[in-house]
Length: 160
Length: 223
Image (cartoon, rainbow over all chains, first blue to last red; front, side, top):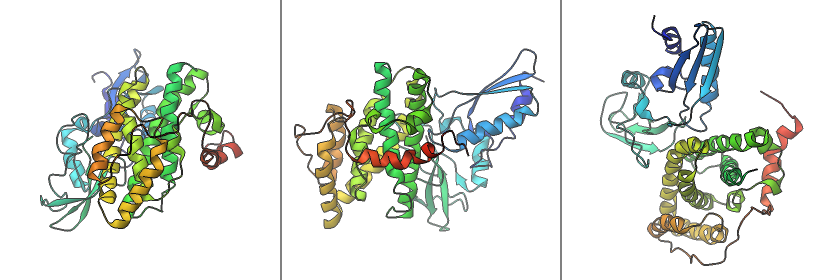
């Protein structure tokens, strides 16, 4: 087993509390995992998605709980810089988002951020004919869109 | 506190007080989508305030909750414009534009540990600024009634720009006001200045009474 492999494996099973189709590793918020020299302790570095996202504290707790099953000592550290970006979401997670009814972010983030992009297609029917209903959605990371073809509303994971 | 922390406190308190004001719209906004938008913006501002308050508090050996819940009005350093009551939706959106345009100037200037908070806040604030701008244009260049309300908001808010206005700030808001068919009032018109000496409007005390009451009634409570 490579260094900290069992920690990474455990983290793959920690879901994001608001988008449970994704793990915290899929989201790209796990920035570093370091085992202690004796292998009994582990330090995990997390970078929060949004400043006020209520999921942040739940995630830190869930990460701790998941790792305490394997390690005697678990430390969870928050790192703010570099700031999290949707560019860190795993490529393989984009299909998981679509399967969950959320259109994945389109394009790479550019600063200063005034462009959050637009969904390429409706995650329900695949139609490219979509329109924005509201720039803010049920969580800080999402906007509300609608498919013009199948008329279903859906969430868009904003480029950030 | 160090001069650096005093500066951070102005931003932190501004974000926290405006967050509280925006949260007062919950379940009262004109549409459900706007209720959600204001809630999201309030949440971002709350997170930004916490990030800075943790830094300010650490310097004095206190914690963020002591700063948020156990300071008296005269100890708050927010720009006074943040504490004004919400007024109508036009007033709320124009105030959000004014404050977001100020934050767009100050976030990139922060260094040290605060730079980490700022790095995230810059992106969130850009989105708030965009949202507020679109409403100011929509209402200013809308119906006779919405124009009247946005004009009233502009006249009401202009004398409170003193702590947040700068050359860059005027340059940022003027195109929005122009597109909204509103002319920008004179930059040298009278304005109130500075809560740095502890003077506030009478509105902050009421806001804090609501925000701080639970923590003061049950010190150290957790849930």
